[in-house]
Image 1: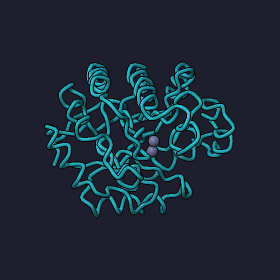
Image 2: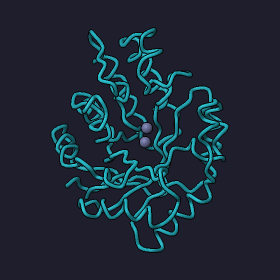
Image 3: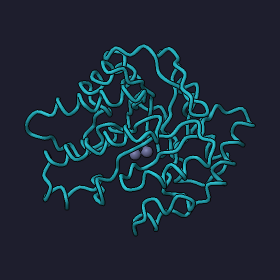
Image 4: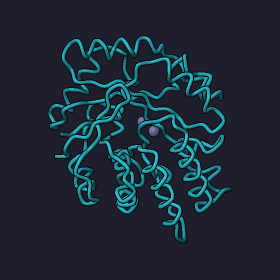
Length: 266
Ligand SMILES: [Zn+2]
Ligand SMILES: [Zn+2]
């Protein structure tokens, strides 16, 4: 079975016809179940977590509308899980936990988009000051803390720091090994995400070598596209499934009510 557990519908209305377009693409690509994982910063109820001007401009949605949309999809027979993609913010662990406990998630994806106040997905600026080597180290240190936080079920796009194609000189395998061990020990999943194929880096997240470290450490996997448009759901999954199998994975994890269950990877 294949799933796509990282989908954003936020570019359209929280209406069933819009969501159905995502499901129809998924079904056409042989995917048995999808999960919607809106960015939690889009919700008024989570606007206090980022607490920056960037965040204040974006928390315009009512989470109740999102919950109702997923319920409605299920009542119409669509196999849709209720997920959410949450920024890991070091200084906000307690507030994040309090937000998460209020809603009936099937799974929670924890993602590192911020290193302190630095949103590294924007090129230039701080990249020039910090340099690539330090940026990678800082990113993976935050990522490790995200894994240790106990807030999440799945960790999003594990090596997102490569998004612009900048590569550190020198060896970071030791650090990546530590990261993989923490994820495995915590009983978490990482995504095998085709989202990176649509970015400058043009690669799956995580890299094949990092995925092998995760496999060795006993971390589970889910499959993801990070689609923001219906056409991207399940895109390039033959490549991510091949990568997962080459790393030694024979099953993926599915989630219901934050409990995981393995299903054979096909
Ligand atoms: Zn993300
Ligand atoms: Zn995302």
